[in-house]
Length: 144
Image 1 (spheres, rainbow, N blue to C red):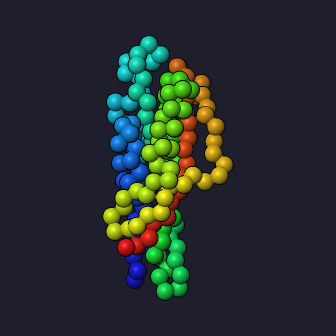
Image 2 (cartoon, rainbow, N blue to C red):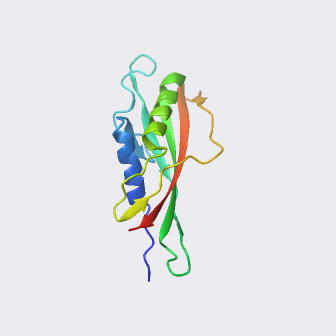
Image 3 (cartoon, rainbow, N blue to C red):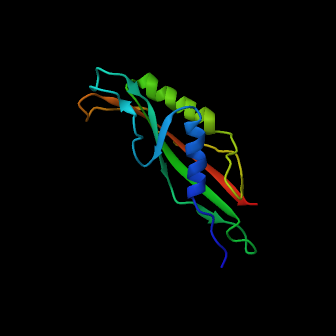
């Protein structure tokens, strides 16, 4: 049996690149100490990122069917203002797009963004509105 490359090390590489910005980040959850630092709307807001990874998709040829793994993730960026959320999206894009991330035991191709990005939006369902921007990424890795 040939093992399929796990997605978790790919997610770890994405999280490490975002944390190095520096930007508070977590996987599928709001990071600790992020967002409003007191009363919503009357206190500072620490912008943050939430990474939502997709399961990796293995690929290859008849001789090496699992040699490659295509990894995708949605990164949601939150801010108290459109500029704060948009700036976080710009920072994440600069830290990831075109970069080769370090994944143990794998060589990676540069991170790219798929077509069809989503616009910045304001969430008015909360007592004090928060803005959200989304950066979608994908990259392929190959077994070393």
